Image 1: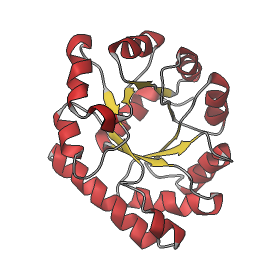
Image 2 (image 1 turned 45 degrees about the horizontal axis):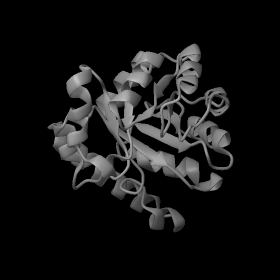
Image 3 (image 1 turned 30 degrees about the vertical axis):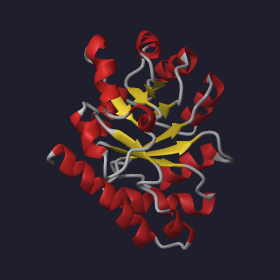
Image 4 (image 1 turned 90 degrees about the vertical axis):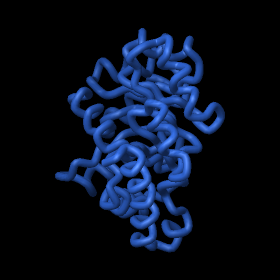
Length: 217
């Protein structure tokens, strides 16, 4: 069983989760290593693609002994949550609010980050026992929506995902984000397709640098 309080602390300290969607099984481990070497702490495999559990396990093996945090995203139901937890996921992210998914995570001591957009969804997620809230899609509502949620709800930890880039990441942190998630802004698809891990590392490092500048690290 993972210590989800420690996982949350490490994710917040690092501030970056890479959403690794659509990466071939043969490429996922080297890409994960390159992204982690660039300074990305959280690595999220989306559960709605083939062999997601195998990819999580492969990254776990590749980055064993490091401080990488490997989790699963796009987890839509309790059965999928159980599957990725069995594969070794240390955190579970959903695009929506599912009390059943949160409950499965809590039974196994795994961090749960359900997706929210409205105050009703945020309260439902919190009452179910969510550890953090994923504001998704962040590009639809912008950084100001963080304050719109946290204002009436109090001390709520929000991770915006979807449309976060080096150009706007400072705005999200200024608005109160505790970390951010991103896919295309971190992962260079062309470099991955060409097997150019230096290019993968460089693009990810640029995003990490933008986060560090935004937080004054």
